[in-house]
Image: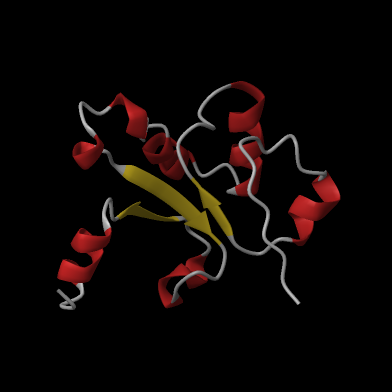
Length: 106
């Protein structure tokens, strides 16, 4: 049995629920105030990771849809490389065609 929660704020999720989750994906928007403090708690206060997270750009600030970047920070057992507990960062593909091309399917 698994659960997935999607929220625009960390503070809207009950603390007991958050403590039971193992994998987190954080996108743009938690870089200030109470949300940033909650994010800092979840990643163990790793300042370099938080500094990198704060560099995420708002995808809607791009000039057009094609140039939008969707950046994410993940924590938990997402990848074999995450054994050290360090957050992983990635940019998601912007279009299906871009994804298919990068994987040799187009």
